[in-house]
Amino acid sequence: MILLDRAIKYAEDVVNGKEITTWEVKKQCEIFLNDYNNRQYQDGFKFYFDKDKLKIINDLLKLMNFATGFVANEQVLENLAPFQCFFITNIFGWRFKDNKNKFRYNDNTLFIARKNSKTATIALVFILLMLTEQNYSEFYSICLTKELASEIKKIMAQIINASPLIKKYFTISLPKTGQITCKLTHSYFEPRVSEAGKNNSIRPSAFVSDEHANFTENSNFTAMQSGQRNVINPLVFRTTTAYAINNSIMEEDLDYIRKVYHGVVDDERMFALIYYADKEHIWDDIGLQQANPLRLEENYKIMKEDRAKALVQDNLKEEFITKTYNVFIQENSEEKYINIEEWKKCCVETIDFTGKEVVVGVDLSISTDLTAISIMYKENGKYYLHSKGFLPSETLDQRREKIDYRQYARAGYCEIHEGYIINYTKIEEYIRSIESTYNCKIKCIVSDPYNALQMMESLAKDYEVTMLKQTYTNLSAPTKAFRDDVYKGNIIYQKNKLIDWCVSCATLQKGKSEDVMLAKENKNKQRIDLLVASIFCYSKLYLDNEVDLNKYITDDYLEKLGW
Image 1 (cartoon, one colour):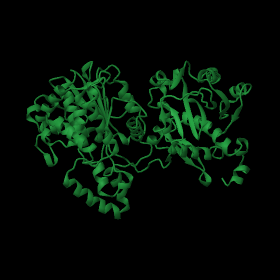
Image 2 (cartoon, one colour):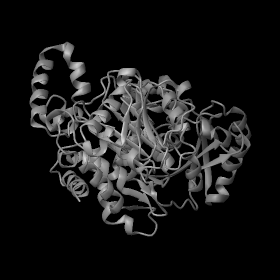
Image 3 (cartoon, rainbow, N blue to C red):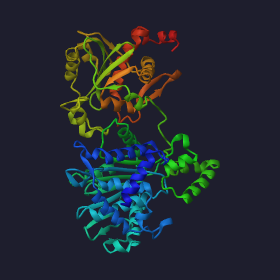
Image 4 (cartoon, rainbow, N blue to C red):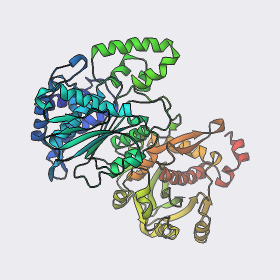
């Protein structure tokens, strides 16, 4: 089968280094090969690859012709690029074992530079869906403007009109944002301008957010998603190049995709092909190949000519970097705190706290943030860490971060309490239970005074309590030292994917004299609380070996130390 054979070869070429691409594409190819060759045959794996279903797609593509470009009037199947074969194969081939009509991948992203047949690829996908999915299905595209919204429809219409063997089964309305209807399934495709209020009443079986990176808020996207709640087999697609704008929602989506690839978030139903030039390869040929997988020599010739102009004309640089190298211009300049792969090397399944003297770190919240509690002891130069999150149940559905807290609660990574706000009584009860639960002795409790005074006054009757404000003065040195100990392998933490996620969200915010403090890349959709609580613990243990904590948190003492 041409489609499958080319998809497998593309994945193997990527993994073996024969294809120049991004680490994200390599990871997706590794997932495909492992799932195809191994995991689908395991009892605990929910998905399988349906060659019969894909054969139908393969044969339908034989009936279609391209309408424009270097392959005008040529058969689609024979002229698909390897990455297109890989994309289509994964979308249509993977199914649920208990329901062969249900797609595995319901969240699909194609992030790719301009002039790589992005629109044609998604146009083919929607034509195929119209021919093969449930009768009376509704398919949509959303975009910011009517002109952009009509692009997918235009390409779909061109392919249909260039394909006599399927043309008779479709009706194409003349208006730019009019419908394309499939006579066989009575399904239709309709491009829509992104107006959230007008998109609330529709019922998409599948929709694509085209030029997704051009959006700075996601109300339109979520409005479309909400219409899929009663759809048997809902599909979501994002297709886009980079833009020179602040706060693109695509940057958040890329962050989530990378967390899945790093194993910080579990999501077996997400598929993505992420093509862009690495920073060190912007302006060179490797970067061109990373961002542009179509591999048309004529395209590369034009790109190189445009690059030569952009290098000497400042007014051309922005457009060239965003559209040809597919790199966001206005990126967050803050430094990532810890490389997540290095952090995960410090993970162990369990830690035995029996007989140990521990420090407890507490980062309290009210409702929006996580409340985090970490416990830590030091032995033979190693710091042993266990963390747990706490949050109220009634805010779960309104939370903006893409984390399945209920799943994490089942795994023991966090606790969910009833109500709209954090139950401080439950938090205090947990802290007081630490000694009996873990057979250890609490040496000290370290907490930010924010929201904590009353509870800490209660705990101070029975435990040593240290209040530590989150300032550059107080936390710069231990924050740097904690990172150093991670890279040295001196931090050992008990498996918890919630703290993995917190670590992956953390950046360094720099103050005066190279002082640093933890920050979040996105204050509304990311959390670092379990990491903060862990550094509270570490600060006490670290500083006890260096200086007296009470002296440390004074400016005068810092100056004496040369900090």
